[in-house]
Image 1: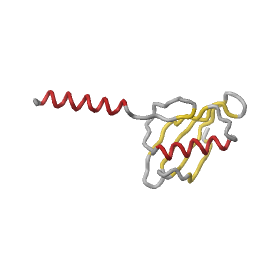
Image 2: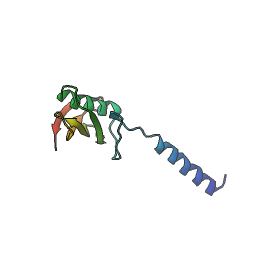
Image 3: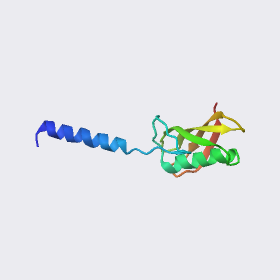
Image 4: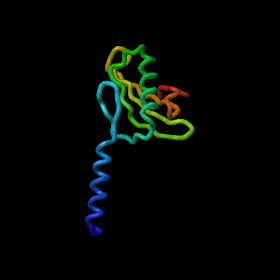
Length: 107
């Protein structure tokens, strides 16, 4: 295989892989920010935020997540809180296994 064909094949494989990146949210929305933390970490944070509102959040979106060996940071938006259309931003510090170390409202 010539060099141009190898480069083309590599580029196509990279595009196919990037299209398979999974995004997660409650109520079906997705985000466009970097997502590096594990699915378990993101899910644990979404569950913790929702439980702070008695399980009544209309939608929770993962805005971004950043992996760290110590603890990952997951930023979330809780949409439709406090009986209206208000959105609150949360910062969740969690282990990669999903154990919450800290959960705070930042906006």
